[in-house]
Length: 375
Ligand SMILES: *Cc1c(COP(=O)(O)O)cnc(C)c1O
Image (cartoon, rainbow, N blue to C red; front, side, top):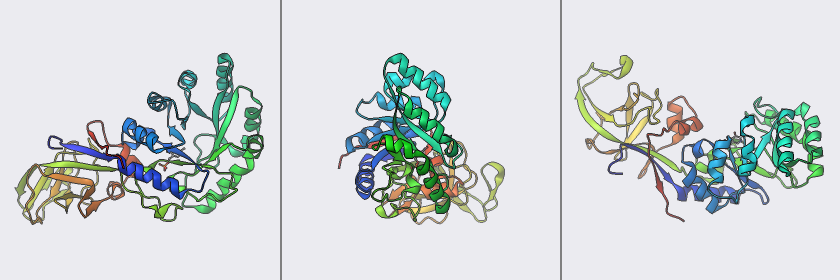
C-alpha cells in the first residue's frame, strides 16, 4: 500500500468464513439468497460475487437490471433475483440474461406475460407482498386476486413469494406481518409446495423452525461481517468484518491555543496542539459530521478527529501522542491495528448514519485492495 493515499481493504477469506458460518447456523433446507446490491455493499461486485460463487450461495439478489447483468456476465450457474421494480424498457433483459423479476402488480403481470408469450417460453418470477414496508409489492389484503391471476397464467412460473420487514426489532409488528403474509400465500403453496418463501434479512434473522413455510433468507450486511442486533437469531455466530478503511497522515503541524480548525471554525483549540492532516475526506467516505466524536488509529493508538471533515482531508488531534506520528504513517478509520480496533458501526454512529449508507458512500476514488488468499 506504499503508494496509496486512501484505500479499502477487502478480505475475501473473511467473507468466505462468514458465509460458511451463517450457512451452518441455519436449519437444513434454508436457501441462502446473497444480497449483493450497490456494488456488493461497496465491496466491489466482481471479486465479491466470484468468492461467493466459489463458497456456495443458492441465489443472488440485486436491486436492478444493471446489477443483475453484472453478475450474469460472470457465469450462468446462479439464479439472479431483482429486488427492485423494472422499468418497462428493461423487460427484455429478463429473457436475454435469464433474470428473475419481483412482481408487484397486474400491470407487471401483463407485461411479463406478453413478453413470455412472444418468446414462446415462461418467465420465472417472485411475487412480492407488502405487509408494512409500503414500498414494493402488492398490499397483502389485495394480494389474493393477484396471486390467483399469477397461478392461472401459463406464461408466468411462480418460483417464490416474499415480503420485507421495516422494523424487525418490533416483534409484535413483525409477527403480524408474517401472519398476514402466510395467510395470503396459502393457495400458492398448495399449488407449488416447493415455492421459495422468504422475508428475513440480516437484522431480522429468525431461526426457522421445522415445518415453517419460510425456506429462504436474504442476507446482505451480515455476510460482510457487520453483526446483527443482539436479539437476532444469528447474533452469536461472530461474523468478522470484511472491509477495513485506511488512509495516510500527509502532514503534521503545530498550532497555538485559540487557532480555529476547518470550515465554519467550529473547533477552537483550547491548548497548543499538534494537528495531523489525513489524506481522505467525505469525498472518499469519511462522514462529514464525525469530527469531535469519531477516532482514528495510528500505530495502534486512537486519536480524535477534530473540526468539520472536508472533501479531501480530515484533521486529527495528535497532541497527546507518545510516539509522535509522522507524515506518511497509516491511519485506520475502520478496522484493526493489532489489538486496537474501530468498527464500521462506530464510525457510522458518529457520522449520524447507518452501516449500509456508510458502505455505499465509499466513492470511486477509493481503490479496493483485495486479500485473495483462500482458506
Ligand atoms: C437490501 C435488502 C435485503 C438485505 O438486507 P440486509 O439488512 O443488508 O441483510 C433484503 N431484502 C431486501 C428487499 C433488500 O432490499
